[in-house]
Length: 285
Image (cartoon, one colour):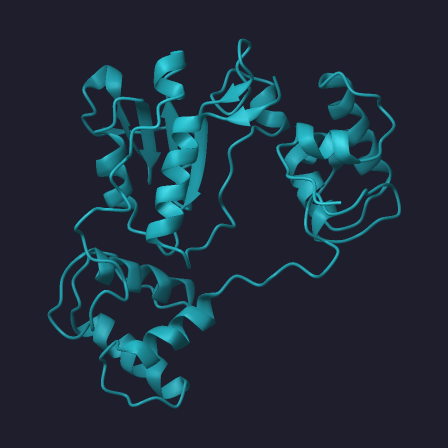
């Protein structure tokens, strides 16, 4: 059986994408990189069915605490980590300080049970249908409160606003909205209606990778360059591939050979269809 994301986490990811279709996904992830593979981690494939039982979700453009609340109420969930706090089944999902090296402030982590019936569960997580308001569900203005205001504040912070993400549309949030509207030649009324929301979506939209550089769209080897090479270097890790960058150099090739040997592949130092697949990337060529 090939490496795959646990079905219950595919359900979770689809619900998050449905609820927040414009969210940032740059910090998303599921299959472990070289650092994860050197230790025990839910990001590594199971020995029995090759499922990966953990997922990371970028927190920009979503309501992370809404996701946490629904995750800890799902029978498949084992623990969630976000912003130096961990909620685990072993503690009855009581919030506790997380002291790991990664603070998980750019993404939240969800791990699920390795019991086959739970990791394969198709039970909804309740996120897509949650009654909490989403950004765009209503016009936002002074004194509004809710998860949609938290979304607004999170997106604003991606543009340098430095707002407290508290879900309260107070004076600081209003002042930032007014300044943003002026910068986009919109009516500076501090009201987030369709025109302001469209401008905000456009301003925070992640840049698309250059054509021909999406991971999995081509074979890369020494001499190649681009965003897909940068992905390979990040995935294998700086310890094996050297510092981050977009050039497929000698160190990158050595790191790829190491990864291929570890995964039982021919160690030719070329990232082709089989190596992309082992990295959890969908091959499109």
